[in-house]
Image (cartoon, rainbow, N blue to C red; front, side, top):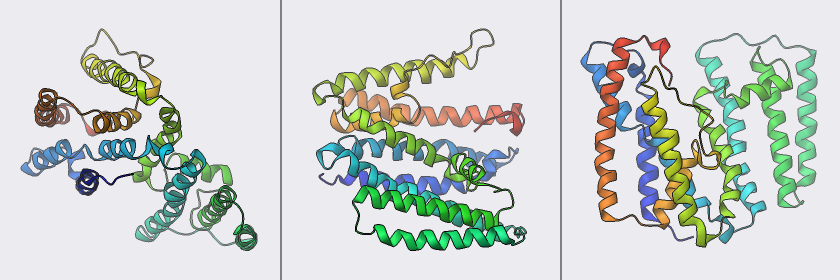
Length: 296
């Protein structure tokens, strides 16, 4: 795949935006002060960060089958995202325990047995080094699940059994800022389906899907949120393109099917007007309602 320079620019810009958002906690504690107005502007202007990353994924991954097989696609996704997610969940939890000086569980015979079992798993892993790539990847995932499970049992008193650890991983309770991994994994599972749509029909299929979801799931939902009489029905959406998958398809569509100059100008103006509107709306909501009544 030919490297596209604008993708690199977007990656850097979105990464900087994520840093700014994660250092902008003052936004969530409303105050009649100038610093909160600044935090409000930062939140509104740089909120594009995560959607941009999903749009980049659409550009780089939907046509993956032109470069490698579906099997290779999943192996790459597992090794580049799922295994790091497991590893850094353990590291992040350990960091939080050390930072907050939390007391570690008392070491007992169960912990000792778990450590012995982990040693055997690590030793057995070497026997699969010459196996096929899918088998090696499966063994890596199993090994890391074992490492995370044993590690959490040793350092976290709330991780009482394997299912409990899995539940906390699924809900990113160990490291809450890892929430984006879950929609990311869902997106990875969806992309092979999108890639099967024939290239001759993609522009019309993707375009229609984007339009329906934008009007029905975004615009209509937002408008009806101000009504006390008519409420939005959450069942009214197009599942294939809903949620963060909308941004994946949008990224691919914009990259492959250049927009007209007039339409681009509309988007540029909207990109300025909408954040300004959101900034003012947030100020009004925070001044009228307590923090606990507003969702992220």
